[in-house]
Amino acid sequence: MGMFDQIKDIKKMRDQAMEIQRELQKEEVEVSKNGVEITITGDQKIKELNSNDRSDSDIKEAVNEAIKKSQEVAAKKL
Image 1 (spheres, rainbow, N blue to C red):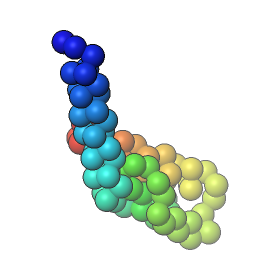
Image 2 (image 1 turned 60 degrees about the vertical axis):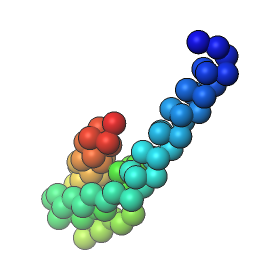
Image 3 (image 1 turned 180 degrees about the vertical axis):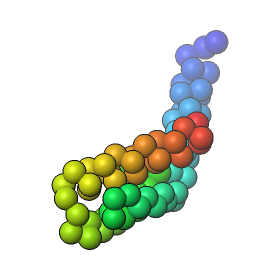
Image 4 (image 1 turned 30 degrees about the vertical axis):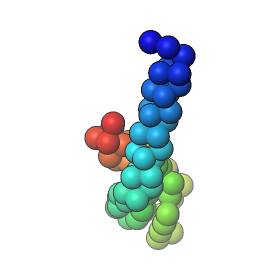
């Protein structure tokens, strides 16, 4: 395999990774836990967080759950 073929392969992999990233940005996961409501994207950006005056511990548990679910969505795309 020549150097140019390797560059083509790297570009193809990069393009595929970028496409997956775009798809993940469109995915949304909604989590409601301990009275806290979170919407997070597949690329793990929190879009909405409603704490409903819950404790920091409740918020942390809900955020961790949302991240876990968004990771599961991402794993399915790979």
